[in-house]
Structure formats: structure tokens, C-alpha cells
Amino acid sequence: MYLNRISMVCALTGRAEVIRVMLKDQGAEFDEKVITMEMWKESTLKASCLFGQLPIFEDGDLTLYQTNAIRRHLARKLGLYGKDQREAALIDMMDEAIQDLLNKYIKLMFEKDDSGKEGYLKALPTDLKPFEKTLSGDKGSFLVGDKISLADYALVILLIHHQVLSPPCLHAFPSLQSYLKRLCARPNLHAYFHSDDFKNRPIIPGKRT
Image (cartoon, rainbow, N blue to C red):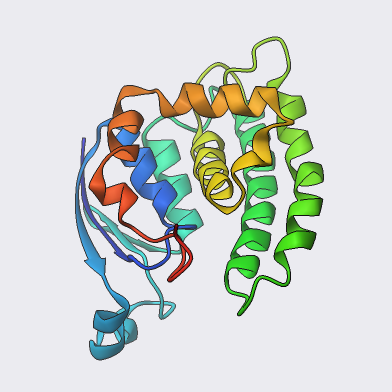
């Protein structure tokens, strides 16, 4: 499958990185144009964007803006949205919960100092507990059903980011640890997560260690 183009600002991967991860894991071919902050400020690209922001996604004659709209389009196209409407609804539920945590994380990352970090990490176990409970069931391979989905990609990236923020953050969550290890071992993801392309891309400007 060939998907025409993804354009995104490379300084922030928290929302856009999951698009790359989905495509990489599924072995989909795509062209990517990375827009740096300097390029964004100096070019007329912003004026051409429907909502004045990146990413832009082109798939044939379809042009999409808004990261979550792109993610859901890809999930439907690549068969990552469950086997039926029930699973799709559960995937949406999990994904919304992940987006809630992602929003808290991004807010923390944009604070000028680390004053909010202690409180954030104190609340983190409560935020992670529902995912641990979900994955500790009989199957436990994926968040919903027996196949990887849109929500799994979002959670994997968020867990990786949190291990950068606080390496011990998953110590009390054995199912999440096993889940993350298992998904990161998928051949295409393993190759991507060990690539310079992934390692050298900052999560937030000045925050990646």
C-alpha cells in the first residue's frame, strides 16, 4: 500500500508520531516531508493549511488535516479499527482515555519549569491503572480484541514517552510492562524504535534526554 505524503512539524512528536508508527508497523510505503519550526515560520505553508496547522496528510485525492482524523482514516484503511462496531466503540473509548492522558503530558512538557512534575507523577498511577486492568484480563495481548488497533499504537508511544520522563513509572504495572515489551518487539516497530530517525527526533523541544 502506498500513501502519498505526510507533512509534519518535527519538533513535537507526541501527537504526530503515532501516525508514523502505524505506517511503519504495517509496512505501508509513504513519502514524508518534515517541516522544521524555522521552515514553518518562514514559509507560506501555514496560510495554505485549512486550520493553520500541521500535519497535512494526502492519500490520493483526499487531503486531511487534524492528527486524530488522520489516525482514524488510517486505522479504517489498514484494518486497525476492530472486527466489528462493538470493538470499534471500545477502541474509541480506550483512545479517548489515552488522549486525556496525552493532553496532561503535553501540558506538563510545555511548562517553563519542573514544578508540576512531582504532582503529575503522583497522579500517574491512577491514570495508568485502567490500562493495567484491561491488559491483565485473560487475553491481555491488546487493548481491544485479538489484533493491534489504533489505540495500541497511541498507548505504546505514550508509554515510551513516560519512561523517558520517569524510568520507574511502570514498575508497579506488570501487564503494561509486558505489553510494551511485546509490542516493541514487533519486527517493524523494533527496527523503527532503534533507528536514528526515531532516536534523534525530540519529543518536545529541549525535553528529550
